[in-house]
Length: 485
Image (cartoon, rainbow, N blue to C red):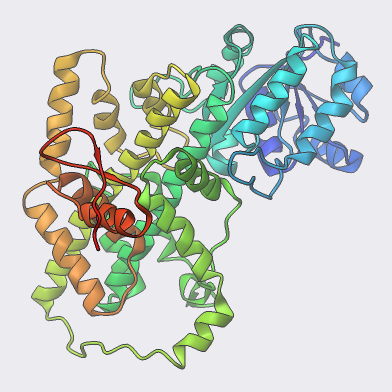
């Protein structure tokens, strides 16, 4: 039997689907899982699916022997749930355990590709350790969920470029396609840059999902729209070129799904889960002093949603003084438009905050990143794919005329009637006692950068008053201190 061109360890749903994707694209792939029964069941279920191109191994030595050299091995094992403390790496013990077991069996120039959600500092630690043994380690962010893994994900690999060149023919074949039908994969950069970009992708995902959820909350509580009506509203939003996206598409479907004659959405607990990547995004932003309020608030919103006991107790004690009037038909129509405008502008700024974090971190870690290409690989396969990414990629074009024209188009979109509607909607939400943390954070982000002056001059005066910290002046250079008393 011919040796496999690539191997994959970890046959949970993502790993199993990615292995099938690889085989279906014409590559021979060997698979291994610590639980032998899972490997055997996978071969039984899918071994014939791709003309026998999948080979199952029951032990690591057999798995290693089945691969062409230099060996290329994808790891899709649990990265470790606990997020790191600021300035530290994560706790990806399962990945470390697999590497420790695997690396003594490998030869010089073999390549390990971690496609799990590892912390980027863990990736760099592993790269440094394996380099001393002449082994290559690629940290590859992968987005698209179960369906993406099977039909084409967005891939964000980082590490040694010479190692990437050996695996990119396979990655290009299995990746999703962008708006121009090119593969949604690109070499991100050195070190842990691939996993860093994926981490920020997830932070943007948190923020956009939260903004959509807040839009839903306003529409159902103020507009009193039914689930079928909400589905139609979001379907119409999804026709907007700047809003058309995977997340709005699935939101439209969610509102119509029934079980035993009941809409499932009405029976799902309002306590959101998280796996840590959003938290990692906020931590690194705080460490580096980068302003990403919509992402921060999206993480906080998930945290408070999980405080179910505290929320239940508070509901009996905290009384909201809310308006009782219902919206007229014309009022409902205006509300739908206001939500659409607010969604469009807020989501633009969710992307902006993520890109700003990547940009400033790239300077900090000395990564030379191609932002147009990073945005391009988000155009297909991944969770945050949307029509707006076409314009956003052009804003980073090497053609300065195209970049300037596109940037001006984006700035124009943030002004005018849409912004007025956004502000009206935020006032309406506050008046009706509806929390809109990420919606409002995006507006604060906009206003913070648009304002000529911020009130931190008072904070500097206070700091100087009680701590003699000094301050700078607008009328002359230097550092100053005042004896305030």
